[in-house]
Length: 239
Image (cartoon, rainbow, N blue to C red; front, side, top):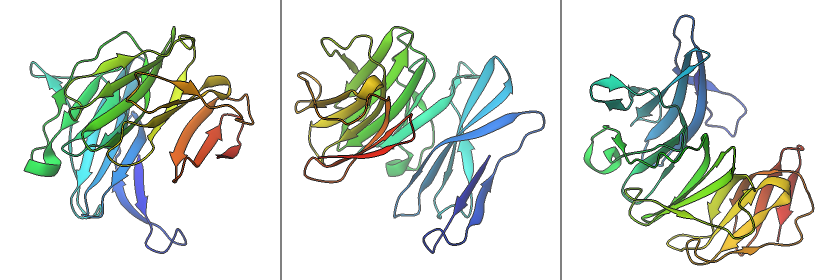
């Protein structure tokens, strides 16, 4: 597993992180960087077909030097993978397999200890997260359909948000519309794009998405302009 950086818009690249272990498959699942020099890379190790170990690698000097941590329970290393993360006002928040949620407050107090926040609800994988202020939203999928979870306290406590009529829809992407707001969009299967103004209490479906493919990612770039990617290889601009 490798992390590279570029200082000239991608013309040239330099290696910043190399993680290798004998007879193990490794994969960088997510990457986060701040202007302060803090960089976080979520790396999963796959020692065999039935196990996944999630590691959080972190750097405070733009990737020149790295350390890592992982969650331990009762002295034993957790086998939960880490798949996506986001930065709230007070914490870095990580989501993993079986809809587990971890947080760390090392951004503010120097600690790199991962705290387990629960949320084991029988799901398989958390797909995407976003945060603004102390509000955090996470989406994931199980065999029965998609789940949406919302937190208003930096990820300490979570509430599942239900969307009437979309219990079997899978959800892949989520993004807040602006800073310090309860408005966000959720992208899902078969061209589903959902919109809430109140943190997921009430929902509307955005019509006019020119695709019935699964919407995998959603990016907000002002005044309700969205960039969407699909599993059919398309990039869509929605206004």
